[in-house]
Structure formats: C-alpha cells, structure tokens
Length: 248
Image (cartoon, rainbow, N blue to C red; front, side, top):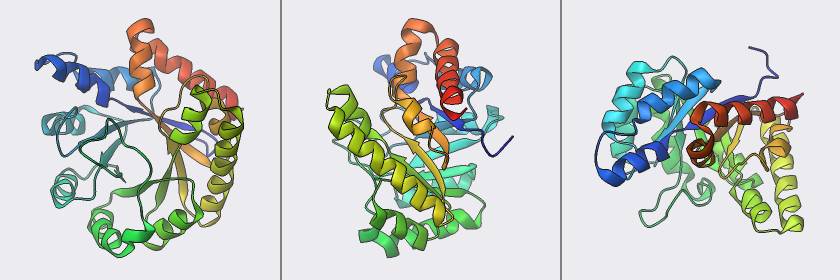
C-alpha cells in the first residue's frame, strides 16, 4: 500500500451501544467489524471504557480472533486497561481521556501535565509491540510532550472543527481547521505519524483528508448512524470515496 493511501479506521463502539440498550446479543459488533473490513476499512477501532457502557471484554476477545485488519484499542491510562492491552497485544493502542459522566470522549489528553506518568504507562505497551497513539488537541505543547514520552503516533481531535461546522460558525471552523493543518505538519516534522478523528462526517471529512501528513482517520458514530438509513457497507463506501477524492 502506498504512502499516499489514507487509512480509514471504523469505530464500532455504537453498534455495541444499540446492542446494550436491550441487553441481548444483537446487533453484533463483531459482525459490524467484518462488514466494515469488507467495505474498505483499513482497521477497526474499539474503546473499552471503564464502565463498559458499549464495548465489552468479550468483544475485544472476539475482535482479536476474527479480524484480519489491525485493531486499534482505545483506552484510558489505567492499570486495568494496561493489563488487558498487554494480554491481547493489539496492533495499536490509543490512549484517550475518559470521564464517567461524559457522553463521549471530550477533548484531548493532557499529556504535558502527566508526562512522567504517561511515559511509564506506555513503555510496557511499546515493549510488547503495540504502536502507541496519544489522542490530543491540535496544540503544540501537547504534541511536543507526546513526542518526548515515546509515542509513535498522535491522533488529533477534530471535534472542535466539526462542532463549529455543525453549529454554523464558519469562522471558528476555519480557525480550527487551520490549527489542525499546522499541527499535522508540526507533528510530522518531529517524526510522529499523524492520525485524526472525532465527529467527522461526509460534510467535514475532505478538508482533513486532504492534509498530506495525515495517515489515518478514525470515524465511528456518524458511520453507524448513517448505516441505519443506508446500510453499513454503503455508508463506509461513501466515506472511503470522499477520502480518496480529497487525497487525489
């Protein structure tokens, strides 16, 4: 696969959210992951939260068994999650901030303030071969800290840009997009691989996909929502088409 190929990671968390609303076995996140793979996803993302509100431990077990594309395991920097990651050794581990009261992951990780703790936390993950990614805002200080602690990858939080676009604040959206562009280039200059995600839709994906330094986009909630109307395969195929068009 060429270096210009922009990878798409599909987050299946909210298939599990729908399943858990009734407490049964359906819809099955593993089936969604396999469909996503067939539709052109380059990887699957799953966030095992401390409160297990969507993805479960059994889902992670199953994903590790059935996937032929890489699993990106999103998790908080806790001892429990570290043990799970060290047991499974997924291709990638993305460290994200997590508060029990939030509806979704809000904002990026505060790396600069927790630099020593995070450096020690990620070292064993790197030792077993996981690619460690840090989910952060498009902020120079946080990128420099992520680089210092030994992360190989950063994932830039695109939520502020997407929110401004959705709320009809074009000047704010343009400012957030410019920050993402500048910090993608800055992180790349440090030797970090750059990913991006959170809140991306058909309407907002192309400007981010066009950044040459960005190697992967992780998109979930919007695609699962669109799949209700279009089906999962067509929803992912359209996102893949838009990404490829922007990249070209």
